[in-house]
Image 1 (cartoon, helix red, strand yellow):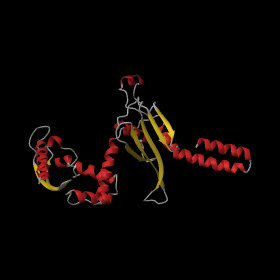
Image 2 (cartoon, one colour):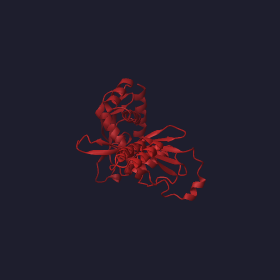
Image 3 (spheres, rainbow, N blue to C red):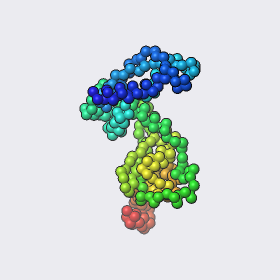
Image 4 (tube, rainbow, N blue to C red):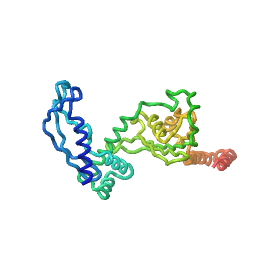
Length: 285
């Protein structure tokens, strides 16, 4: 099995590198080993994880032994497998993602909906930890005079944001607001973004980082298309000095519909005023 040979060679090189004390250079004294299962896209690989006594120069109040392999393989899952699990689980249910993995790849044991969900949540927590501190705008911490040195941007970028309420599956009496969006540069593929309003403590920073990954520049024109909700509008404010906010046509027509119903009721009380309002609404639409 090629994967077995590759993993064993990489693990052997890692262990040899960490088999000596970092301070004295002496070879560490071993204390046996324990088996671990490393899960890859091409099957499970059984490995031995050796333990070494901590040398006196490094002894603290912590454990008396160390296992270098746990530093290399903290999750016992290959990054390539985590990537596919996360990627597919973002498109289909966890169970479907697990079945698809088992159908097209020799992933071996341990692939099911629960495992995929745990891996996805663990990956999400790691990404959350890498998210920088909250920033209200692209210009925060920058000098506008430096914008002249930026290259000419590749046209305008458009990002649509919309919010909706979803019932909490743990507490059916509660709802939470989910904000989702799609950013579309003039050149390149569109990308999606989503987060929970009120739970996410860095919403603007998340939008900024999302746009940055698509190559957005501080001097680039940006259009926000939203449903006009207070939370979504507040999120779009101040992010970029070159941004504009546009109410999407669907929600514009919703407001026109409400006004038309009001005008139709006004006809019964003031015929001329009501008909005039209806004519204006027809012209707007």
